[in-house]
Length: 84
Image (cartoon, rainbow, N blue to C red; front, top):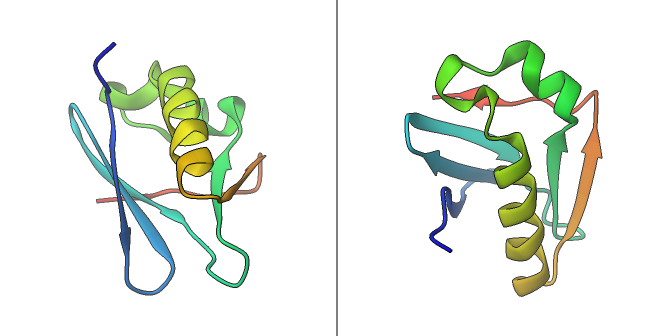
């Protein structure tokens, strides 16, 4: 199955995520490598049209990315997204 998203760690503890309609940044704390993803409900409240229905794919692909990079994944309603 082809990936929908690409993940690129960036300076200042950011994970740049590029999708089919744009890009955004998630927090990527490095003390204990971990990615912070908003909950599906929080995502639906703030995501642009192109991304709104893609949370399940993002969650699955980010889960795999975290496993591959020995990182923890935290999902919470309070985690934010910076839309680029």
